[in-house]
Image (cartoon, rainbow, N blue to C red; front, side):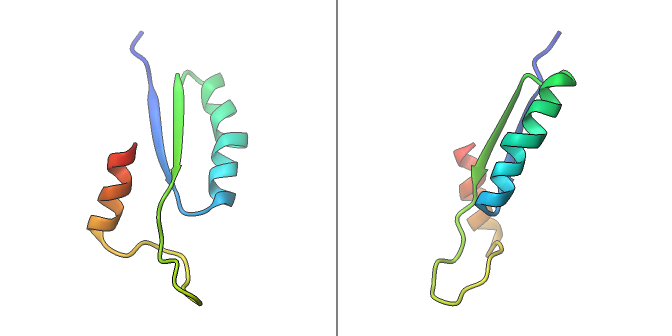
Length: 65
Protein backbone atom coordinates (compact mmCIF):
# COMPACT_ATOMS: atom_id res chain seq x y z
CA UNK A 1 0.00 0.00 0.00
CA UNK A 2 1.27 3.45 -0.88
CA UNK A 3 1.95 5.84 2.04
CA UNK A 4 -0.51 8.71 2.46
CA UNK A 5 1.02 11.89 3.82
CA UNK A 6 -0.85 15.16 4.38
CA UNK A 7 0.82 18.57 4.74
CA UNK A 8 -1.22 21.31 6.43
CA UNK A 9 -0.47 25.04 6.63
CA UNK A 10 -1.77 26.51 9.89
CA UNK A 11 -2.41 30.20 10.42
CA UNK A 12 -1.94 30.12 14.17
CA UNK A 13 -0.92 28.03 17.15
CA UNK A 14 -4.54 27.13 17.89
CA UNK A 15 -4.99 25.65 14.42
CA UNK A 16 -1.69 23.80 14.66
CA UNK A 17 -2.68 22.38 18.05
CA UNK A 18 -5.98 21.17 16.56
CA UNK A 19 -4.13 19.44 13.73
CA UNK A 20 -1.68 17.75 16.10
CA UNK A 21 -4.14 16.79 18.84
CA UNK A 22 -7.33 16.02 16.89
CA UNK A 23 -6.73 15.55 13.16
CA UNK A 24 -3.43 13.68 13.34
CA UNK A 25 -4.68 10.81 15.56
CA UNK A 26 -7.94 10.59 13.59
CA UNK A 27 -6.17 10.46 10.25
CA UNK A 28 -3.65 7.89 11.49
CA UNK A 29 -6.53 5.63 12.52
CA UNK A 30 -7.95 6.01 9.00
CA UNK A 31 -4.91 5.04 6.96
CA UNK A 32 -2.93 8.28 6.70
CA UNK A 33 0.73 7.50 7.38
CA UNK A 34 1.92 10.99 8.24
CA UNK A 35 0.58 14.45 8.98
CA UNK A 36 2.92 17.44 8.96
CA UNK A 37 1.76 20.88 10.05
CA UNK A 38 3.62 24.16 9.83
CA UNK A 39 2.74 27.66 11.00
CA UNK A 40 2.56 30.17 8.19
CA UNK A 41 4.32 33.46 8.65
CA UNK A 42 2.03 36.47 8.88
CA UNK A 43 2.36 40.20 9.27
CA UNK A 44 3.95 40.88 12.67
CA UNK A 45 3.40 44.65 12.65
CA UNK A 46 1.69 46.19 15.67
CA UNK A 47 -2.12 45.99 15.41
CA UNK A 48 -1.88 43.75 12.32
CA UNK A 49 -4.52 41.07 11.99
CA UNK A 50 -3.88 37.51 10.88
CA UNK A 51 -4.26 36.22 7.39
CA UNK A 52 -2.11 35.61 4.40
CA UNK A 53 -0.67 38.43 2.38
CA UNK A 54 0.16 37.29 -1.14
CA UNK A 55 0.58 34.15 -3.21
CA UNK A 56 4.37 34.48 -2.99
CA UNK A 57 4.12 34.75 0.79
CA UNK A 58 2.16 31.48 0.94
CA UNK A 59 4.46 29.82 -1.61
CA UNK A 60 7.44 30.50 0.65
CA UNK A 61 5.66 28.70 3.50
CA UNK A 62 4.58 25.82 1.24
CA UNK A 63 8.19 25.28 0.22
CA UNK A 64 9.05 24.74 3.91
CA UNK A 65 6.83 21.66 3.91
